[in-house]
Length: 258
Ligand code: PGA
Image 1 (cartoon, protein in one colour):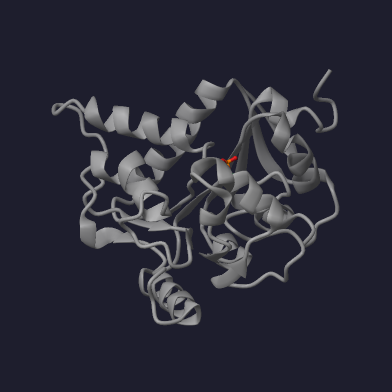
Image 2 (cartoon, protein in one colour; image 1 turned 180 degrees about the vertical axis):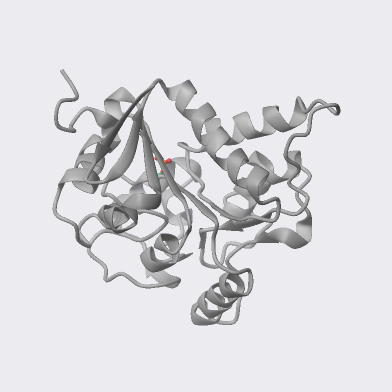
């Protein structure tokens, strides 16, 4: 793996699998330092390798070697489809339970999901912000990135804010169709932690893989900072952010690519 700094952000470039292990280790380091850390997690295809690496690391724990337990760790999902109940296999709470939480010793009372079944979306957003405040803020936020530069469900072009409800962009609905059996089943609204919620984390880790993310990464690190590329605001948190990229996702950065 190679490390560089771009716009003050630490950038790590490597092979897809070694990136999964590096992000796994970054998350484990947070828990080693602070067992009751508050962690925020994304869904999607990109984090799957990291979650598999965290699970296999946990299952291989050697009782003689102190390795982090998740028993005190507080885990939050950053977004959720509005009105998909937690028992729906397409919901993000289902995703996190099946990919990560049910394989670790996390305590159910330490898990938090945006409440897609709250009386109103505004209630759900207020409750989530209050919960983050009560926990003392986020210690670590792990992010993916969309092809348009979105982070969580903060779509390109919308004003930055804290947790809010969003009408999903047609490109996001289309990208998410692959998880549903028919296009009309894809939810069109979602609850999401806002840019300002995510930037409030003490440490931020973004992982991107594949050529489809290369333009979004170029914009994030070297384009103009603004709502046209929500991830570009990470540069405001450059001192506490690391972006992990495979060669394809890094290919449009200066000096990278062929
Ligand atoms: P992906 O999604 O990891 O499935 O590419 C990332 C995102 O849209 O935030």
